[in-house]
Length: 281
Ligand code: ATR
Image (cartoon, rainbow, N blue to C red; front, side):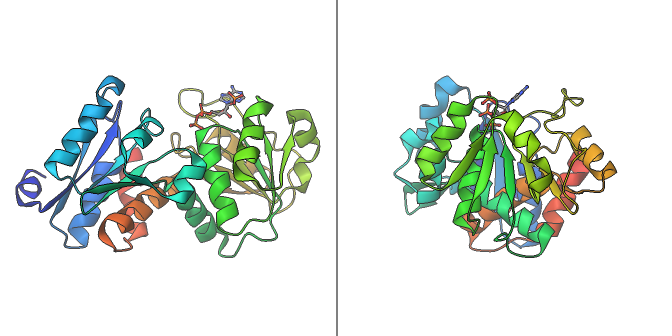
């Protein structure tokens, strides 16, 4: 790694707090090496109070691009020169590209998710009857991109209904908003159920976001969580005969789209997944 830093012609990074467990440096540095690019990626732990100075420093140093993660994804937008339309609708930025000294903000989370979903299903999503659980930042990204990449309609259910209403207002699409009890009754109608909440994420591994006893035959249950790799919900869903998708694909997908924005090269997704899985095991 040390040698790579010394030889690096371009530097990329991650701004977050904390960043100690981030899998992005390993994923991107491995891919730079595999693609023969003399670049280096480093995770910077930036306290929210220092974000402005950190971005100014990145600019002064001529950093080529960076990812942004919790808790900076919204705040970062104030310090950029331009924000891509998808990121504007989502209301958050996770990838920044230095284009001739101008910082351009993108959001690759939703596109990364759709990419992992299409890889899984192997076909378009036009006929899918979709239920999205949750209406936080992750839901916003996923719902925005699902519409952008071909979905015609979907339903959102959330503990706080007003947050789902905000997503609908922002997007201007025909989103059905359902209280939990109403959505539960319709569970057997959905082809795809996406959990965007933190229910089931370590350490809350026994929390289940949705019931699995009345799933439609062939239903795909999709969790954005990758720690644990298979949530209790996905295990239960498999037990009921459903197909499942964990959050590794979305993580790799968002990284792949960022990598392409920075380098113009579509990376080796399978290799990126292997690197991520090595870190998770
Ligand atoms: P993220 O950016 O990861 O999406 P977030 O914006 O805090 O995080 O959103 C978390 C989502 O998980 C929300 O939809 C939240 O529901 P509320 O909007 O009602 O807060 C949902 N969530 C988290 N814990 C939950 C729980 N125990 N029960 C129900 N919903 C939960």
